[in-house]
Length: 401
Image (cartoon, rainbow, N blue to C red; front, side, top):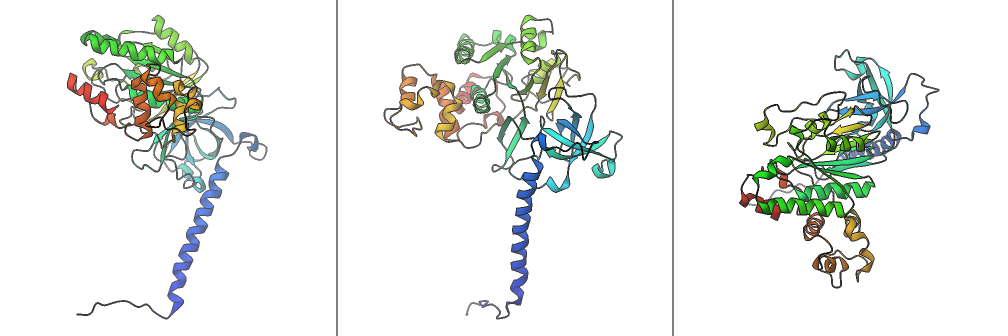
């Protein structure tokens, strides 16, 4: 039986809609690119003379359809008690397709007061529309777990990063700390490491305690500030908490880490303007569980702000070449020009200065393993499996890193 084959139609008129559709698609992409350029504008171009009712603000919370902003006439003086419900101007909504959200917590934005008909959420809170965004000075971002081609920016315009981990429940992930440190180095912002649930170390083996001390000492030798705390049993007057609080004064700090490590409980020790919800049942507290569901900017008692972020299950960095990634590991920077090959990956190349330093014990073998895992795309998802408090699971988790 002969196969049927469509040979087409000599009438070319039916092709016109196809060409028109392609042309419309091109025009739409041009509008998106133009809209993106229009949305991000330097603050010195914001025209308050023509629009005296418009005001600069800081994004303090972001939800799916809307955000909350607070006026910030002078940078660093966010009026967090004056909260407005905001949406991004519709012409900008499709412009930043490479990111999960058009805006994120920490963004400086230009707002136009409006009524709730533009926002369409039926609220008594004052409403506004975000017309422009100031270029970001820094940002903390990961690859979006839902769509790998897209970025998920956790926060922007931060002065420092505080990485919060717990020794146990959930088990500390040293590789996760390393990935956060790479971001801090790339953004040229200081990083503080806080290890919580110190009291649980008493129940662990000598080998595990020695490992924790050794890893903390490694970070200290690299120049990072490291704190060991037990948040549930400390208060604002504790010397360590007071010292830690002092480092946050007059700065914007983002707190990040796995679910259940105690970020919100830690924030509550700094006398925040708004107390963060935490799980009151201490048994639940030690199982590692979310209480924060969205990032929010919070004013602290001694001044300064923290951005408390939801606990993450996976933290995958976007792809980086070996040169860029090596800069994120401070111990490798001075050795990069000593390798035989200028673009050495520090994996299996001959006469590699970094590999020699690892063999000589000058670079932590565990940190070097983190570097290889990030470069080869083999780390970042270990948090998806809840750790079980057995030695076998601990070894498996270490192998993942």
